[in-house]
Length: 131
Image (tube, rainbow, N blue to C red; front, side):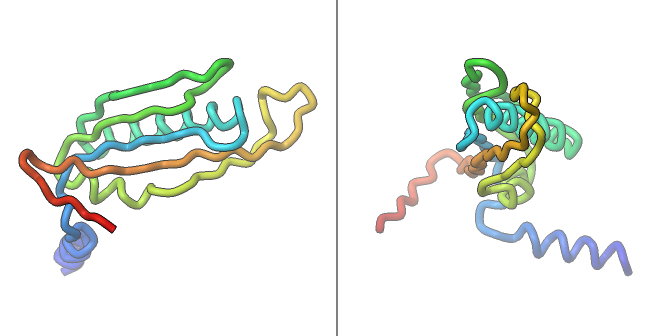
C-alpha cells in the first residue's frame, strides 16, 4: 500500500506537459564577482553529480570560466525520462553566505547564482507563445 501511494504521488508530481522531456540546466553567476563564480562552479558540480546518480546522461554544452576562479556561466544537458520534471524545481536564484577563501581579511560574503531549466522539446514542436 505504501509503495502504491509513493508511485501515485510521483505520478502526480511529474504530470505537467513537458515533465517527461530531457532538459538543459544553465547556471550563471550573479552579484559577487569571483565569489559568485566559485559558487556557480559548486552548484554546477552538484547538479552534474545529482543527475548522474539519478541515472540521467549528463553532457556539458557550454562553460565560460571565470578570470580568477570558478565559472561565469555553464550549461549542461540532461537526457533521460522525466529529467525536466525533476530539475524544474531548481529554477531561481540560489544564495551562498560564507567566509570567503578569496578575501585575505576573511570577511563574510554573499554570492548569487541564477538557475534556468529549459525542456528539450521533440522534433517538429512548433508552438510559439506571444504576448
